[in-house]
Image 1 (cartoon, one colour):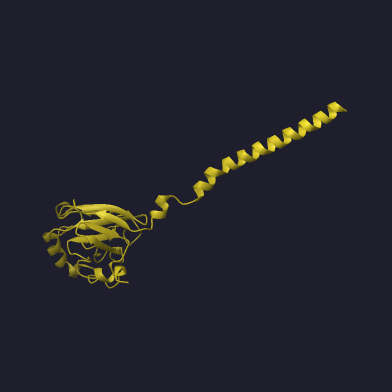
Image 2 (cartoon, one colour; image 1 turned 45 degrees about the horizontal axis):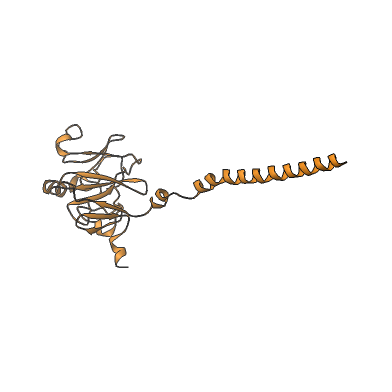
Length: 199
């Protein structure tokens, strides 16, 4: 009788201990899963504005950044590039950017806040490929009168150095200009509209 009571007490103790240890184990196992379910700092920041230092960007050079998972090209145009842009209007589908996406302050010939700097989303408006940046001197295979710009090798769409689309190519619109502003002479903030400061 005493042995039977001892066995029941031992059984209850072992059952309770196993339940407690199992409960702690299950809780410990769920911690990594729960922490992985909350968004990381990188995920939280993906839609946030991105600050870019352009102090080392030489004339004719390009920087590539990311904003909202998209490539953002920042091109510092030379005086020659700006002159070439002005001479192309008759070859472009939408030279005034009437049917293209850009903030109001970038709806001009150079599609920019400051003529020197082009800030554009590097995704072709045809099927979402990423065009190549091709300088004037490297574009003989694209066109005999190539003045530099962006060429999408997937389907042959061409864009000038303001991201404006040429006539007769598959892309229907100019490259998209994201919202951006200069926060100093050497720093850009991509993803925040210059007009939002006044509001």
